[in-house]
Length: 276
Image (cartoon, rainbow, N blue to C red):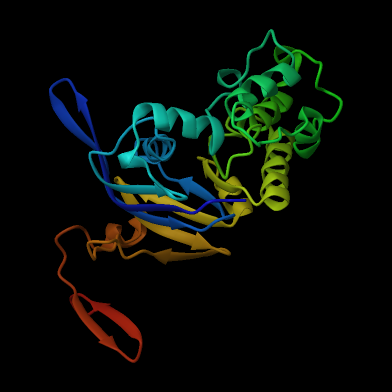
């Protein structure tokens, strides 16, 4: 079953040539068990940093991240490594980074299952069953490197869920695929989510992918800028009470603009220089 994910005031800072670069500046995000969520935003907005933090590949400078019953900040490096081999599945950008090209697809899946195989009482899922879920039935004994690019991406997804994780983190699963390959990869993700209840978080630049997934969280300037659900966009109130205005609004009302705020009858009105 899928697990819940919660981020509270998450901050991450990179050190680049004696300069601090703030990649995330206070991210608040809640994802329910079994949800599918797309993280979108321009390059450098912090999407991939957030997914790496959720995977426990890096630690935040401040804030708290909970994945299921685990507070990631309280876990040791060894515990985080074990968690990635059992309860968190990670699919990196570029299928080749997730596969051993000289090994069969079946062997790649088995290698991903090794850690959970050592856990007492856990029954491993048949690789053929996993491949059937991602649309690669009958490909178990094919070398991973011999598969077409689109099929390699689905094989990478199969490896990501081989251990039966409650959370699957996928970075740019369709970036190198044509339309047909993109659609097949999305069908695989949707099937995994529907049949297993796996919580799925996808980083993507492709707005069509975000629209297909349904819930779209836009990361802008290291924060959650907005959220789209069922085709409608919403501004999001952060934990510190701030709200990021859409870029098109900022084009008309630049930073420093003063707004009068009128709150009545369940609605909020912003007024500046006579304009609502």
